[in-house]
Length: 130
Image (cartoon, rainbow, N blue to C red; front, side):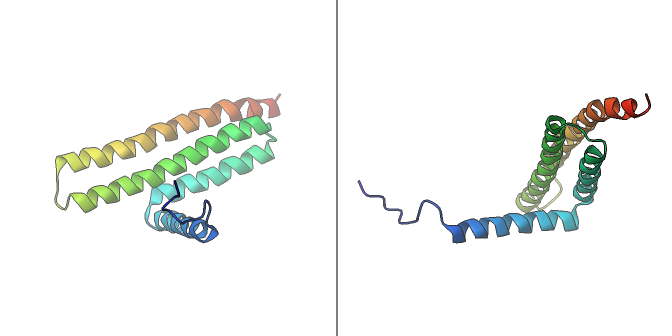
């Protein structure tokens, strides 16, 4: 049976447009969300410190994953907030719960990432003083 979808398996034009849309979402979040900027700055500092302290590659990969997840959660939180605002035009306690819970998810993983960072960095920092 022939496919009715005449689109190629991979379209470079559509792929390029997808990246443009994603970039616009990241740009919007950077411009409008203070926490995203804070977490991005923290990510840069963490990854630079990992290089300066010569943290092993596997540990750097764990740090990069933790940082990436925090930034992804910030982007998702922004989307959830905007969807909620779009659907619910007036104050509604349910909308507050939705938005607060999404923000709570970012907070929980941010704390988890900080703990992961401490578990990785503290032994390397302590070794400098021995």
